[in-house]
Image (cartoon, rainbow, N blue to C red; front, side, top):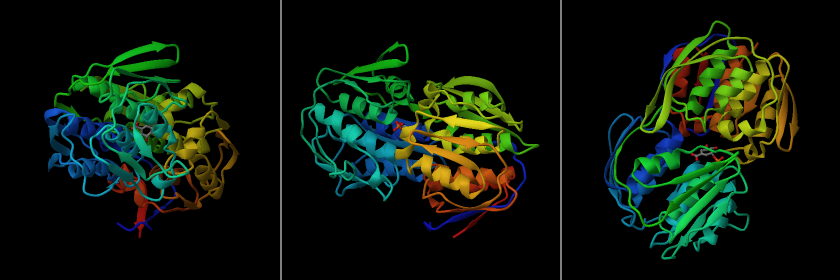
Length: 441
Ligand code: S3P
């Protein structure tokens, strides 16, 4: 696919219908990782066939795991056990995927073989000290560039020791990295998170039969496991990705006359901050058919257009909605009054600097913003239209696509091919729901 793909959105329209967005990215990555090191067969349905999760899948194939894709969104893998991975012939290329590189750095720093992890231009700029620091404390031999960025080179055959690690930032990727290394470490490995972050790794480890202890005191949770156990293969039904559903939730909220139902969406409370924030802004969202599927809460989400107003986003909600801010900023642009976000410096080290890139794009389409080191103030107003650059960031491209629903003139979005990393059929689903979107390469 051409990397120079552009989206062009005609102004106006509304969203309608029942949609199922693709599988959850975080859960899909973890299903491949844990299924590969489990014993016996793991069958996955609802798997996200996006570039990021396929990079994880290819990495395990390169390490000798037999993985089949018998049908759409289905994966069957034959686990090799904790010690059955084989040295890959080449460095593992993880493309655009921060989750792949950070989770694999933990798992692979504990193997008997040397391995190198690398990625695309965006991933090659992202900070890895957050994982190399705790892994080095555990006794891993892991090297990044002088700037602390990929490639990551790991020397095999190190004996890891468990640690008691307090994360300096609220990051599920760092937590999962340390826990995966902890599976191989002597004694117990504990990670304390300063605020709740997505807990899919803990839930899935338990689903694979691996004991995990959690102790919550106020905002902070300590998660512990002991090395040397085993995982037993299982069946996993991956729910639809709330982060992908968010684009349609925001689109339906801002486009008058819209009425959309998103089916079988993961609503794990450590991910569901966006629901709270949109409710606070006045969105008309109803959850129904709430159930637990494979240890993860799932619901159908119905959303209708309604007038939105600006809010001050509570800092405690930031990690719970960390991937949803590009879309939320579009809701803020269409809301009445000011939306204020602080305590969100982590947004600057995502697939792009999401504070600056969103601010530039919002200004380009006529919205007033004030940028701060750790956040942004967005003044709701009338979206005019114009050209914005997504800088290859999938979520920024999809967020500005939804902005077209409230624009007066067309919006042209540059550098959109990476939408395929998390949402390969976004264009088709959005067009079917009513977005007047065309693609130009
Ligand atoms: C993810 C954790 C989050 C999120 C990313 C996926 C995960 O990153 O932004 O898209 O699957 O663990 P951080 O943990 O770095 O905040």
